[in-house]
Amino acid sequence: MTKRVYQSIILCFLISWGIVLISKINGLEYQGNNGLILAIAYMFMPALSVILLSRFVWKEKAPGVHKPKSFKMFTLAWLLPVALSFLVIPISMLFPGVD
Image (cartoon, rainbow, N blue to C red; front, top):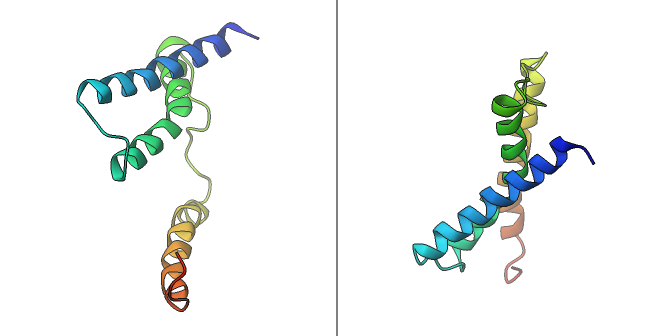
């Protein structure tokens, strides 16, 4: 593996464990919404570590950070999943008692 891979993994672990340490020091419980928010934040740590390293350490443009060629497709890619998730709510109300 290359030096960049090791740097990415190490930074990702440092950021992730830093979040855990800060939340433990503040007495955060990992149940309910707090655990969900922490889990969502964890999912962004690998991407965040690569973006930070590529911008500030490797001095190159971050991967995947560019202007889209078509604004219509960009908007569709962001709004279609949101619209589909809101369409699921009325459909799920047709089946009472199902969680």
